[in-house]
Image 1 (spheres, rainbow, N blue to C red):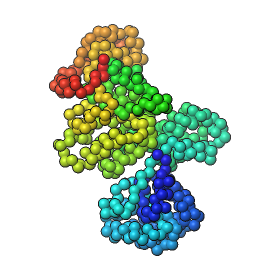
Image 2 (cartoon, rainbow, N blue to C red):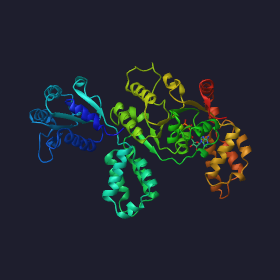
Image 3 (cartoon, protein in one colour):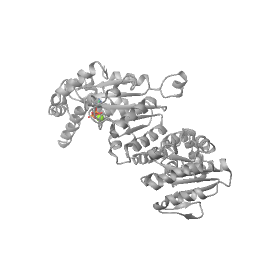
Image 4 (cartoon, rainbow, N blue to C red):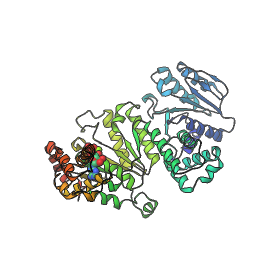
Length: 495
Ligand SMILES: Nc1ncnc2c1ncn2[C@@H]1O[C@H](COP(=O)(O)OP(=O)(O)OP(=O)(O)O)[C@@H](O)[C@H]1O
Ligand SMILES: [Mg+2]
């Protein structure tokens, strides 16, 4: 969604006295509010910004700094002659103060008939239960595509050399803009300027640097990871049913598909046995569909290390929506949640989870969710309800044909020609082993051959794999209970 200029304008013209603008981008919000002020009240609109460190600042002088002076600064707003826009930052930190609550209620009454508007910039939609009636909330999304295009063009025009501008081809512009989506306006500007420092022209390397810059910035949210995966669908052995499902939908996020009237796929739940390729597939889907991949760490959301779980989650979702179309990967979805009923219903975890399920159901943006889970019995039943995910796939231990393929993939990826090995007998000898265990056997056989200074041979591979006690043995009971669960609730990922 674009910046809600019109919505804010309507609130101001309708005489709403206090607006809470929820955003992590102070500068962008401030600039936009200023131009709305000029639009609504003309050039004589006063414009003050208050923060506890800078006080009330109108660009030339400042007064009322210090956190104890927020109430006094608000009185000044009351006394000032309008028209004016007054932005207060960080007020949400002081809302335990009864005088402040009172002051805001007074302002609500007194500003209504004035041409003055008080704007709070905060990172939370729920400031205080006491002020629900007085303060209207406007949620500000990250820049959408058209705003991002403007920012990109502005930076290129204003601060790059002619040679850069000439080297910029339309497909590169498109790729850069895609890379910037999901960042704040200022972050976009800084990231772009940074990758262009000392450059004479734009090339693939610039886009790569921009994606790297974005990965760093996204990581700072603490809950999201922008995954730059190179895993391809051909790196996954077996799981033919799942692959076919993905192949059928490979164009689902294209313009053509929308015009054809297709619904964009909602998401997949991959459940099953550890080490059989669930996380691998999550990465491969994004590559197969040429979509960016974001990984959400629900444990970090619940941890409160990045603000309250609600804030952390909202913030993550904003980034995800701004990046759409994209794949959102939630690894080990069951981590951090317990079966509903086991915990009191109103814990932050279950609230966030409820919020998440609602978001999943109602999301307006093309975001494809790939969730993985090992312990399906920990997931609340509403997750598995029809309509939440398009499909639930059960990923189990690979069969003989699949094991053959997994050996081939891991030998090849390490520069060994699979033709030189007896894949059939390797597959036959590794009944009950997972993909991860097969990979581990290849790796340790390679160590063995390297230390003996000879080419890898079948014998080393067989010895390495027979020394692994497979999961199918150590976790026999868990696996058969998972299989029973899945038999009538999930589709087999393998054919
Ligand atoms: N079907 C497969 N084809 C190729 N490699 C595989 C396959 N399954 C597993 N592997 C190898 O094993 C590694 C671990 O697999 P992955 O992380 O996808 O397992 P997982 O199902 O997510 O397990 P967990 O539940 O423990 O997270 C992969 O990175 C890959 O190298
Ligand atoms: Mg995994």
